Amino acid sequence: MASLGSAESKLETIISYLLIVGVVLSLMLETAGIVIFYRSRGNLDILLADKALFLQGQNFFIFLGELLKGAHTSNNGILLMTLGIVTLVLTPFIRVIASALYFAWRKDIKYVLITAFVLVVLTISLALH
Image (tube, rainbow, N blue to C red):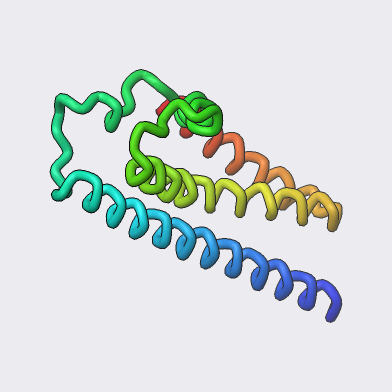
């Protein structure tokens, strides 16, 4: 029983580091993006006429695919801010995947099913928005 508590403690530690790294990385990307955006434009105004700054009619996964292909790289500041937001959105998603894999490795079917359900809900939510 002591090894199970130790394994759970390790999982909690890994997940906490994963969440911290995701949030800090997102914050760094956002900060760098804001600085670059300000330096390139001289202000932080976002105009409604600048269609490249707005996403419409795309779900998260389509947007992510286009981002990885380089479709949204017109401004390095915008790109970094976008990557910061993507990092922030993917952090809990990756946390749930890590938990599901861990519970599958431990052969804990109850928690595999629970985390699989959460993963399905998150995936559907990202696919619909």
